[in-house]
Image (cartoon, rainbow over all chains, first blue to last red; front, top):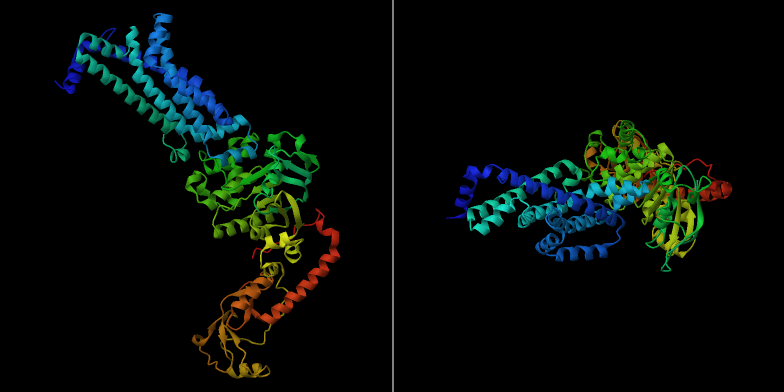
Length: 224
Length: 392
């Protein structure tokens, strides 16, 4: 039996496509957790990254926050939160958000801080206010990098959201956890394949977002 | 008028960038701040639009203290051009130029119409409007930078080493363009450069600053070249200031020799007759075509009417338009030691030897000295019309 056989067997079983624990339902749960975690992490990371990047202050504090957040073991945090808060969506959200903030925060900070200083100088000299400089000059130029921070955060969230299954909250991690428990490797491989497919979907979405949101004048020089 | 009064800038670490500088920058003229690096010229410029706040002293624009004006409104009322242009990469050329009008609340349509007008004024092609900055050359980007600064028609233009990053040929083109635009618009331009040649080319008045931000001399270019205030200014002007000063002397009064210019169909006898009165050491004559345009030099004794035997005359100069510097240059480069003077349509008016040009230089210098002594204080008055500046 090789992996491809597992995949074929998993996805051709019509029973997998129906019901409260069918593939569509699990994928939908997974997308919901991931999107919510990304939205919360972005709501925290983006403003702080934009402001610190614009003022150029707080670089050290940022590095400290990022390093300590990265040092937290996601799985350990999940178990801790589960024990502390009980069965709800919160114990899943907190570790995912903590995981996603550093890439968003650090990349946004760096992206804005390293924008070419001469257009910024010109903007000041033309009488733009601080917020006009940030949103009309710095952000459009930094957008490719900001997107890349969001993208790596999103991919980490999607891959890590499988842990929700450990606290019986569904998602495609359900297949991996159950499969391992039941020694049903068809399920394990199927769950892993779905995770990988979702990660690829994230890549495609961010590529499309980059095409539409980043100016052609900047895109040529950036990486989005 | 911009009045800089006893302005100093000291930093917390004790460095003095500008030291009790006083300058009056008149309207309708280009004032150049020039000096070595660390002389505070950029700091001075940036204090005018409060990009840097002075430690002491006042700067007044048309009598009003800039410190008392809201900073962003103040900046919007002055054009600002920097090195490398500082264009917004994410905006098209037309939207870059429309920036300040948009900040002032103009509608998008009106701002773009104005921007299109400005593109034409600075010599940019219409179909560049929809392009992005990266698609333009350095020189073109700098033109966009100038257009953007002019978009809201500010009376004052601040230019911080705007042409330093482009190659010499493009730089000359941009300088000529700036002088042309200034001829049409008559702004108060403050222009910072470290390049004395650039200062002399474009400045109506030049402020030479020395290290530590003190004023060494503030004068018109020709005055600077003919009488530098001290050794520092003299050294900064370079070794050939005498020759460069000739750029400001007109060829209008040059005495031309018309007796040795002949059309190609002229009779050989006539040429011989006409030149016989002159010293016998076979001075060359200039042969022109039947329209009076120069072809080349010949020895009158050897002339046989064959254009192929003529010695090339090199380059001519245009009477009135070119300076004595150009005339002297042409004479020095000429194989015969004579420069060919032409009118606006390229017809020969006569020839001038190095001796004649030297005499003209001495005469012009005498006249100039007498003239500046006579006009005295009136020269500095801001009501004076802008001096006409030759571009060559």
